[in-house]
Length: 330
Image (cartoon, rainbow, N blue to C red):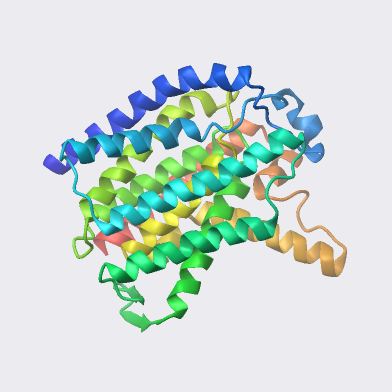
């Protein structure tokens, strides 16, 4: 019962602060003319979204950080190296995404940080992650309890961390193309990993990481108040890069990397569609999908934006339930 009470309280606090903060932030973003630049390929379908404020990821990032700091100061949760890693990745990728969004707005086009600049920033975050992870007594081991195998990766684990962080952050970033899509899916994935973290008793600070996940879920629900169709604000790279990398960091720390593949199934499918489309165009000069990522393919087929989002949410919910069963029960 105490676990349930903590989870509900964390959700409630995150939600209330996020809703209030969003109410104050959106007019401020409009005043600063922090506007979304819609791609020319989507101009006809999404022309009414031109000028919608971006950097809305701040609506769930700042309330989550503030709430966790308050809980730490009040002694409701305990500080641990693993919690610090999750918070560091969460804030680090948010800063990286914020800079990217800022440059896009300043230049009035869709060109922010270069791929090399992004990779350098992500490499720095991964190195700090690896250093603290090893210093806190963790082992560079890929351990899948359910399947019964354990691989000692040694120094290669650092490269593995970078790959997972980059892949996960970019997967959420690619999915963030329709009102409420990435935000709603993130609610389900972090809710699943909150439950998984709470049951990862062998991990130092597992319950505190779970509380972080629940606070973030509440903050994301508050963000969705303003992000569902018709969206009053977009999360931008500020939010999407941070969500993907943080999800990966929680999976790595709790040794549920394989579970991440299940819970983030929609994000992975969206990414695979982009890769398949790119390879097909480059080498065969032919499109397999009408447009990538996958949600835009369904738009081209004539499906309504709201229906696509609802369909993807249903799939995400099913995969999250499967992940909970795989990561906690089985």
